[in-house]
Image 1 (cartoon, rainbow, N blue to C red):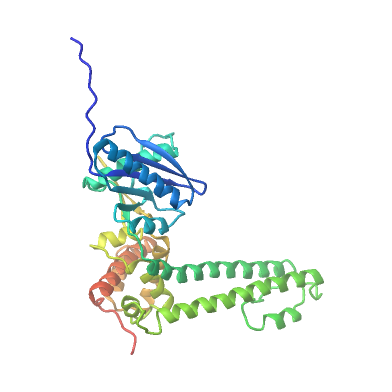
Image 2 (tube, rainbow, N blue to C red):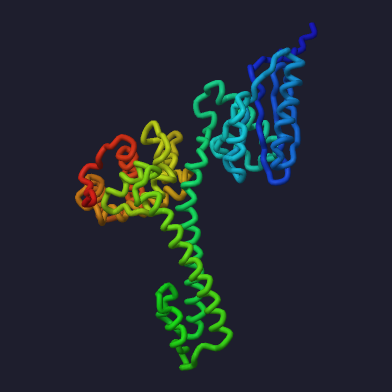
Length: 383
């Protein structure tokens, strides 16, 4: 008897599943249509929206000829360099269901040398999308599509951080140039920086040489420009957060009422995380990358530390705020919890415990902003 395995009949999925592999030069479109067992692949020039929609229209017409039905599209793409603009364009169409996935949430082969190409990645995205649509738990994690206003509000804190890093670079550059001449104690950020520069003398008693002084003056020009831009960014931040207007978010205003939280912390905490909706404390801790990462297998049971898989800006701000919380909120329940744990370990393990405090503090701030639950023992600013 000749027993041959017959191929399974095509399954009507009720939609055309499409994945997009985006690069600067080309977009790879991988599609699985109803009535077909094979994946089709098409290449579109990077950034060509008209060409992309033409490809989508061709896929729908081909499926319509096969099944006599006009199917909608379910599209998936990775969160990456292109940001959210393409997702917003696709979401405007009623016949397109657009999703943006966090690439790190998709299960991959654990081989040491696994193959990776755009073709393979496109197939992987299709499988993850189909599993997610079937309702499989934790098949992948979809990213929330931010509104243009929410995305734009994050620019203030991020630009200021970039400018601060540039300021540090120029200050260190100037100090390094002067240190090679035996000059210490010069502060480029002080207002008398130009006057002090003319009065400086090298370690062997000479005035600054012509070319060195000219180089430092050009560094000061760049530094002064950055200082001006930092003031402009901080003015925009204060207009959004500090000075209450109809556009001021309520959550950010509530954060400013807690002692130890100023305009910069309130801006980063709200625009980077607390404006989002979270169902429980585990979700917000995971989003900030402060969730624990246990390693349990058989008799092996150890903790690897926090996952660091979330928003790095929010995580770094929370760790910094946790240290300041101990100073400005010494009688709060969170500070008492921290001091008790440190005393139990004879003053050791401060760094791991400060991360745990940051996680607890983030959850407490989320409850305060979203539900109005006052942090136990926290001191509020005077009105």
